[in-house]
Length: 243
Image (cartoon, helix red, strand yellow):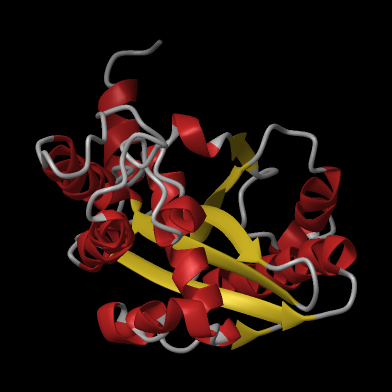
């Protein structure tokens, strides 16, 4: 290389910083029932704030681990549907005393998790839904509609998105949704990155968001305390979007 070439290049090209490459990572999970309602929830985090956001969730996890009433280990998967039903390791056949009190403590873990999400710096949450008679087909259709919407939002701001989805990689319809985006106008990077929820804490956070959005929409009598957690704890998310 000729003397001075490197210095000249540095003068000609601006430094590559996050300001020049705004990117947000989305953690996505789904919820719903087998009859009529499909829901997806997401947690979006600016890459520059990813570590503080993860720290916020891990602080919440440490609080669960040190709570003697819960017996939740640091590496236990948090699955909102089980917690909402009051199911935890301590709720077994030998535990009968104060059963309803203990169940309410496990349900409250979901509320505490949403509060942790609400405090995450540089993070946003949201949900989308579709009322349907064919959950298997329309869950994939809902995801495809959301990816189109996400791509359009990032195109408008000239930014990019990376999507992490709960799954084992066999959900081929989700890959097709990404590949159906127009190449020249793509702002969603690559295929979805599939990660099983039990291996990723922030996918578990997305599971919480999806589940409370489902409870908000489904209005089930046996989950009445959870119905308004989505708008009350995550007011900036706005109402779940019909797609």
